[in-house]
Image 1 (cartoon, rainbow, N blue to C red):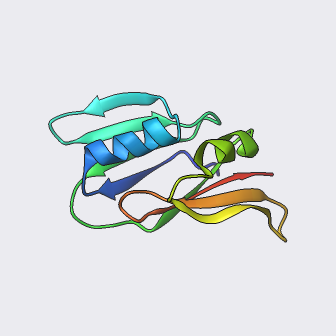
Image 2 (cartoon, one colour; image 1 turned 120 degrees about the vertical axis):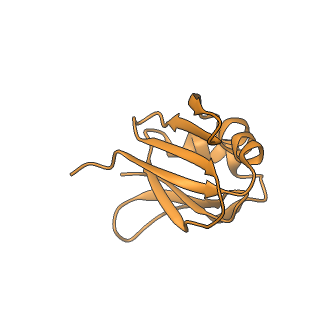
Length: 109
């Protein structure tokens, strides 16, 4: 089974767009109006979306081809929870927090 997508519930869709497009550099896909959803596809092909709604979702992880390049982009932001590191289970990863507090892990095997 492969991961195909995930949706985060966010309080402010515009703030989420600034985070995913501005800080992380993800290209936006279709936006779904009037339901206030924005879709994205990561460079590795995983799909995810952010939708403006009450509630929360805690975390997700995305595999990327060049974790160091993405780390260089975000390392000086105040969103870093865990800096780039090698894990005992064989991944090279970092963890950040989005504007709604969701933990987002980016890793490379």
